Image (cartoon, rainbow, N blue to C red):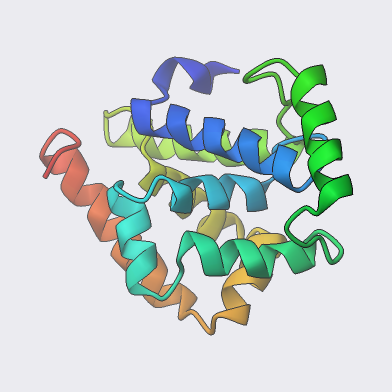
Length: 168
């Protein structure tokens, strides 16, 4: 996968956070919901700050995402046991990526390469929005997010970062 050579530090952190989310939700691979949560969890990145301005916080989005994962609630005793077993049996950064996440990263990489910069969290958000990724669209609709407005603002932020070499 060619995109690995173009991933910026923030995207590396997003993927690491997404892998932690897979353990929390006891799923076998990083999917676009856990990737989106990884972006929000990296709260100091500009993409997360912009998403926060739309009312999407890590906490409220994670609670809503729990419904996507068939009613998963914050782990009780058995949930913690399952988490511990997952942690013991999977090496750090060893959680595989779902096929649709590979597609998300490929599109994000194309966007970054077109701007001649490393892949940023903004490119991940743009990729999810361009694909109209069903799970993410359903999540955003639960918050009554204006998708076109969000897309426009994230696109403007990504362009600004490209113009200033990633750091406006």
